[in-house]
Length: 143
Image 1 (tube, helix red, strand yellow):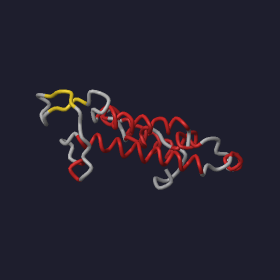
Image 2 (tube, one colour):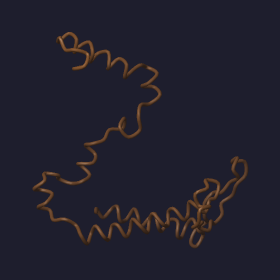
Image 3 (spheres, one colour):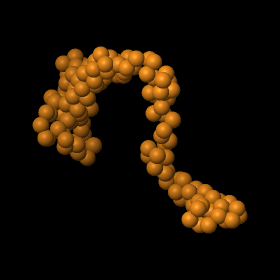
Image 4 (tube, helix red, strand yellow):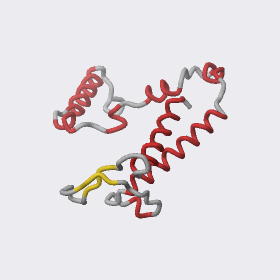
């Protein structure tokens, strides 16, 4: 696991364990459910089911502390059982970030934007592909 991911998890844990909880820092902005009033205050982590309620600010603290802790542990695990470089070279993977970034596009991750949908972006491309296929004497099933 790259070292920067370990640092990010350490920052995630440290931010909440110290800054958000008020142990060493002001806390976070907490407001009412309507966003009308609010103030900066320290937050105690909510470790139970109530931490999943979006209106309980303690869920933010507990989530970041847990995510940071698990990330640090996962990073240490990956450092201890890291495969050798020859395995990456044998599989021609280069590095894992290159492999993962080449397999996804924003459309696959997030879906079409409203602009693309409203402008008929996909309908135009489908029509173009069908027209080219029919011009090459392909059936509709082959296109």
